[in-house]
Amino acid sequence: NDNKKSGEELVFHERSEMIYKIIVIGDPAVGKTSLLTNFCGDKFQYEYVPTVGVNITKQKVTVRNDMGKDTDIYLMIWDVAGQPQFYMLHRPYFNGADGMILLYDVTRSSSFSNVNNWYSTAVKYGLSGVPRVLIGNKIDLKDEKKIILPMAEHLSQKLNAPFFETSAMTGENVAEMFIKIGELTLLSKLQE
Image (cartoon, rainbow, N blue to C red):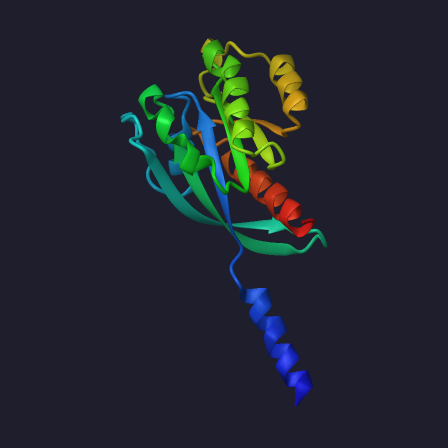
């Protein structure tokens, strides 16, 4: 009968995977790959190898939907190469992004200043309305910290991006930050 059929459709709809493309952008060596490694469960690597092209990681996160109900979504996290020689390759990485993580290193002022350039590039590729978070990474290096909270909070307001300070080394705020971008992305999609 008809009731049974509509019930099956509802179950199918509930189970369909929600997959969102999230791009991680920022200067070289700000900790993009390390944050991903920390969050996605691989052993944290101490040696640093500049990313070639892009790494794509699929990660399930549980977020709150617009009804306040826990929902599983998948983030396809694109680690965009921050090396200048890869600038020409960036368009495909930005295309179709559902959310973005703007990342800087709290010990390097230049990486903080460049967040504006990275955001401008994203806007140029049509991502001005996309949910975003601003992340100051490497807070475990307390003695070397150059970017003070008021500076970061000011930029956070300017970019309309929730702000987190993280450490890929200790894991501080790493999961929270990924859950936040997941929630913002899901909510923006539900409003479309």
